[in-house]
Length: 377
Image 1 (cartoon, helix red, strand yellow):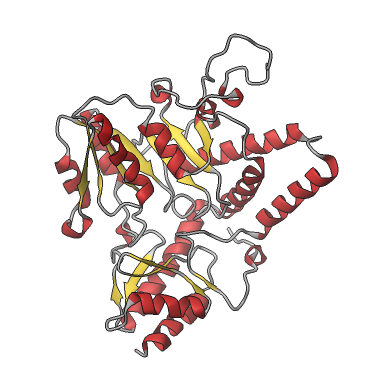
Image 2 (image 1 turned 180 degrees about the vertical axis):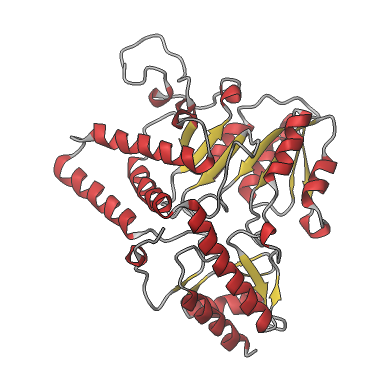
């Protein structure tokens, strides 16, 4: 499906290739936030019931995005780190339990598991740089004491995409939990819980979902939900949250039990608007257009003799393309690109470009031209 290019009226002097960090808001998202702010200024919370309807709509959109059976399975966390901590410190561990992960993880999906070492939990990490078959090598790290595999769907620095179906099938056969940090994939390519046997899925909304910081998805498989020990308590996570005078209480049966206090309704309005655009375009079309852009970028990297650091095969890629220029320090190249308003990141030993489905090809070509000029290739 086509979309209105005016949804992304970015400054024409800017090459925005940094969706793997913080994505820009579509026009409708900025307008939703402005309307919400103006309504607060003029009417206060008069329309609070309508705000909660927007919250319900966001849960429904997130459920569809990951293929969850119900919006009741979706909790709204503040960020990915909080969501992962809810899982890590909700599960019951025994000394000697093992968690298998990846050494090159973003800190959010590494330190939380390492912190469980105080309880005697062992975190075993695969070095991606030494692996030609990461799924096989992850599974080979598992022992009878392995309780969980905790990985990112897409590695943040160089963009390696894991075969989650393969990992999930193994986990179910061995009774191992699978926790997926999906922040570098959701909003960019399709995800389906009916095919991916994930027990936990987490993702913040400010990257490929094109939303704000401060609102994140937390999915817990319903059969595991009541088994997680709650570490935070408040009015919002109660089954009868609107009955403030009720003396007896119990946590909500649905995923709201993980949300202890008042929701971030400003962020909720923003993310709901952003996901409405992704739904209108269609995640299949989003992914198709993004693949065209990453393929174009890789072809240009090869043509100009630069060194590709990201996976070359389409099955291993998502929206991240990292590269380096032989003979030019990446720190020097990054500083030069940012000075020239090419918004990117220095990651994984090189420069990380991360366009999205709407990114004009001309912007990608202009950014590569700046790379060549700075490096004098």
